[in-house]
Image 1: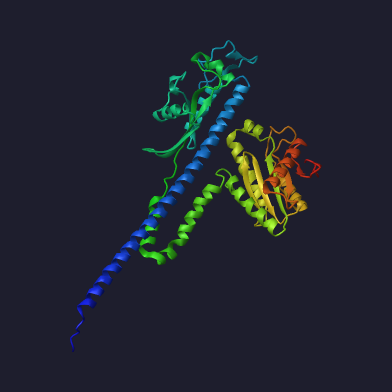
Image 2: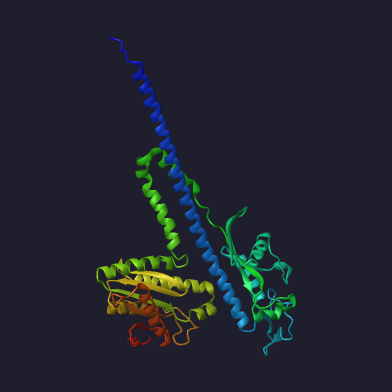
Length: 430
């Protein structure tokens, strides 16, 4: 066999090409790893941010409910409850009328907002759900002395920080701690004027703890990106379904109301923009229903917030079950309000669906002693339909809200249609 006689310059060129190729591969690999790393950390950051925002909103709602409950108490100039082993007279209430005896012999004592909050806190601490406590840098009760974390938060409030929330991991697991300030009002000075507080001073705060927060699954997400980096396009094809599923789950958490498990207001805003633009582009009907549970505050006051949450869940489920078309969309708009998008639906069709929802709620016969006229849970609904090419979607929502306001003004448990002359068809209450 003839021996190959390859020129030295060809060998050198091949060697240089191999070196250049390896260098190019190394550069591409480094760039690819950097891109994957950037994508991974951005995704992780967004997911953690969305999770934190959801936890902040949940804790914020709990805080507001506590504040409303306290305002209810103070609005009644404190309330009287029977004296029991667990409810003894509050030594910090200096009043000749703190303790009274009813004609029946029942002994009663006054409960002020702070005492009430403490008792509610003790009840919540026994369960597995959210916990809260009232505290201050200058507490009347030594038991209300702030923790180290609460002390830092209270000091931040003096620097005009409105609220503080943080994920904390300790021996008991991961929990989310939230705190917002309590602002001194005139009725608060009955107990706190001797401490030197004035109206609008920050006299303390309420901390809310959401326990047992699941840790974010970083490892599966990281493994997915590592696999993409190692195996390239082939692995992307294999894992894209799982990554997409994970993304949908994260997005679902961001756009789903945690209590009722239906879309939240954020998702509604995105949905209405799409449907409104489509309806104008294709000259199709588009209607909005605005729903409100009648006398819901009275329901909460009568049965408690837990039963109130159950009522919201029941109403949301009935609305979902009443909407039969895939394109129909309902969301929790806020508090006890729900909003419904009805594509390809004229005013008569929207009224028919609204009336069907109203009647389905009535048929449940959920007891509501706080309802002065019906004694069961009912809905009031306002209906509006896109009637002009010059309308914007905010007008459609506003008109539905006006119709809802009229429904409540006309006795509740009815459906009102928005008309420019403010005259609307009504349905007699059951």
